Length: 390
Image 1: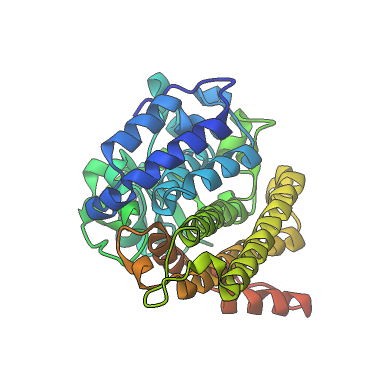
Image 2 (image 1 turned 45 degrees about the vertical axis):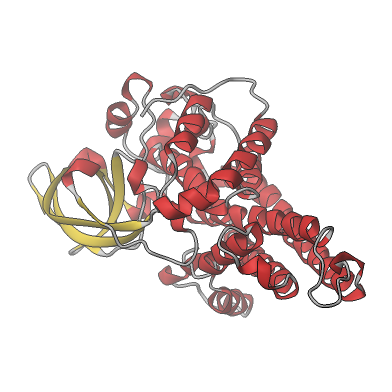
């Protein structure tokens, strides 16, 4: 797909404007289990998918603070839509870490490759002449309904680690399984490939993306392409959770100004218990925002170190990402408990934000018990494992 990045655009104003329309379309997006065409058309016209990609492939080369602020604002209207849009943009950035030959193929003619990236190594790769034969099944392919390509991860027999492979979407099967209580518009269906040949230039060892200079860094010096992949991905993914909590807080506040209690007829916004719940949520959302802002600053400070980013930074970013999602859920759970039965209707913004956040917290990067355990282990001087996703 081709989008038209607009240099000098006021992205914050653009995001605030679009956020309102995402809110209006949110119920329809849930029913569709994908982004509405109107949303995709607006985002393509604005050039959002090119926001992170570097100038060498026609992108704007924006920094992550701007990108994540836009994502946060969009999520105030619809977290599911914001998650999908930000992931597609981030995955285009990830593709800039791959070989120059693949980038020339994907970004030809000003195209922006849109690709889901189910990154768990649940496929298999076998080396053959000129490339690999792969097969497997990959879950959580966010944005697959709007994509041309797909990034999958395969275990390669005899290799030191998995291998990422980029495939044309037309060569794989998509299983329509995404029927969920929350995050429905992400359309995170399942990818299946059987005995598929992938040319060598469309692959890269996972070790080169995480623990060494990636192939793409040579053609994008001085850009964010060298930022650590897992830590960056985790913080980008946590950002819609903050936006959802901010959107839920606004929805609750607006509702309490007009809601009358059954039987008594009292305005709920006049009750001390409402003041208490709202005040607690304001404090909790503010705490999530401060954790997020601190993590964004840390990423900007140490991200340019690339594969040499200190373990302490990677851990701090992983912990912050999970903490943002934890705090967002805590705040919105409390608001929903005080909002009354009418907030449970499927078209109620507070209810949708609640379900989206509950779905987000199931992501492996946001498992609070697991993340806190990793932090404690490393604080005691023990070594991280590959499964710790740092």
